[in-house]
Image 1 (cartoon, rainbow, N blue to C red):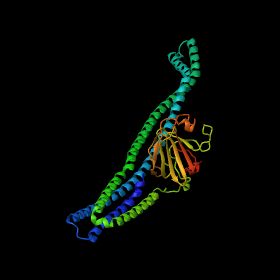
Image 2: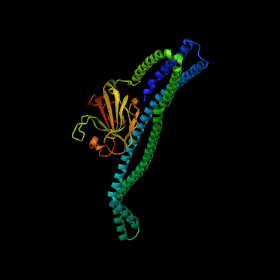
Image 3: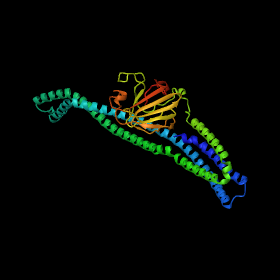
Image 4: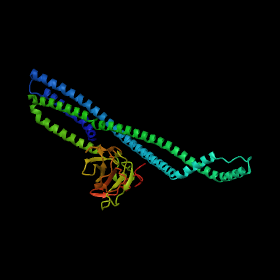
Length: 425
């Protein structure tokens, strides 16, 4: 994507020299012609001169617009990285809320199970309380037989009532806890819903910026190319006049030399703009993980297919945002066999970074990305068995990350911030 920026300096300086040469051609013809020009030819040359000068002004204006567009493009790239980071933070918040919600639901299930196991005891407790209420001990002021019955009833009540009261208190505590858990679960569900809504808003903003980032400079570049072509056609018409025949070969050689110099400057500045801000070997311990999630397999561990893992695997949320961990040029972007969508990034120094297992890729081949810019999104289903083996029994999508030095896979652990801790945070 950023190769257009490398062309700005060329367009700001190259076309000016081209137009200056064309204008000099006209001046040369007017001053060195062998004899007086015919009125029609003189008028044609004057018209061509005015048109070339007008083209020069248009090219300068368009070049300025492209320069401003490139600055805006850089601002969009920074905003894309910020939004991608915000999305990952929202994903972490949603995951945390969902974990808490699962714990609350487990507590509720345990209380309901305990109440179910004590159903018979509770039934007897309620029946005993009803019998005591319906058959109260008689008053002590009647016959001796009634006094004896009253004493027996009082003794029975004194024995049973404390036990019934303790069981009733325990039941009340459990029911109050159950009610409290139900209210907390409802509130936590609302929190998760709000977190997911914010996450969807951030993703919508991300999609709104990806397309303008890619198309911001293209229209201005097309306009400048059209203006250059028109100016070149005007110069070609001037050459067709007989007064320019004697200088045609010399001017052609000058134009070729100018074109070669412009090409050299373009390639030099293009190479400069595509340089990473930090050499990849110097980025050890400084790279952020490309996605939020849990590390389920590390470099060198058994991969479930009878071999040792060549990379790092992170189990993510469904639809998780994936970003580039380092500056680099996209050398491949798209589906590859059964590995899902794959991105191969060249960070320089003979290294390659591979990200596989995505459901959708937003990066393009040839695009130069800065660290933190989005490259794709994870799917909603489990990892590919062909690539990862049976590593995620709960069906989460898995992002596979492989670092290579030349043709050899290497351990990415030393490059991550904080080493191989969990990718969530």
